[in-house]
Amino acid sequence: MATSSATPPPDPQSFTTMDKDVEAIGAHCQYTFCNQLDFLPFRCESCRGTYCLDHRTESSHKCTHTGEWAAARRKQASSSPSTQKPTLATGTQCSHPACKTYINSHASVAVGCQTCNRQYCLKHRFPDDHACSTLTAIGARPSSTTTSTTQTLDNARSALSRLRAWGKEKAATSSASSHSSSRTSTAASRTRTLSALRKSAKGDAKTPPEKRIYLHVEAEAQTTRAKFPKGDFWYNKEWSVGRMLDEAAKALQVQNVNNRGGGEEQRLRVFHVEAGRLLEFGERVGEGCGDGNTVVLLRGVGPAGGDMIEL
Image 1: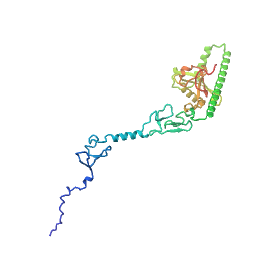
Image 2: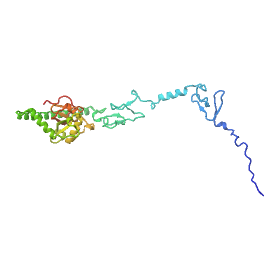
Image 3: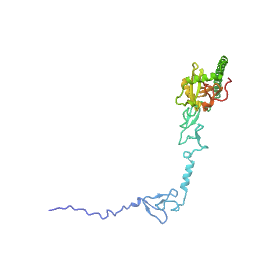
Image 4: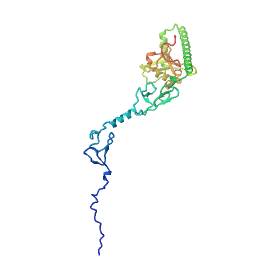
């Protein structure tokens, strides 16, 4: 005899019965004549009321405290110093003269230099980046400043004395040679000297012959701490004096620290013997010199400007 298990009848209310506390999930809109049940109600921050999607804005539910929440936010933002954008009047800029970065802010921190006692941004925090050796420390004692100034003047006087002595020596040598060869034609002598210079000179082979300028290059004894080294070289007329200086120092094996940002007492300068002056770094070689001229590498003689000696 077949037995069949009794199947429980389906609950007719399984899909229609709702929880009696369903209203606890959402909230009714507090706008007059609406009272709609919204499961994701909105709260007005001005009047603290609860509203449906259609009446969530202050204008739609005719808020009695319109604009109070926005005014409170503006007041809080203006009184907070951390959110205030720094300006030239309220902020602090990097001490580097060419930098406009605001420091001591949320966007950029400040780094103090213990040598010059100034504040810099991250880009100019190292001494070489802000030329620290050329700056006078803030709050430095007058005695140390006076000593440093006196030492600088003494070095300049010593360099000028060496420059004058070297010029007088070269002038005496030139005068003696001119008296001994008075019978020889000056033009012919210059031609032979320039021809010998072109044969013995060295330089960059990529420089076209029509753009070459031939020079006698020497280095003063104080520059190399040795005997006067010398050499004959050709350079491009369109080169700057600074580039010619780098090539000459490399060829004569003279220490060149011009690109390291050191003080003037360690900087090399180019002295033009025939013109009796120091050449500017940005000056073109072909404008300040001529074929057969002599230039000397000197250290610690100060910036270029004016005639330094009378030959």
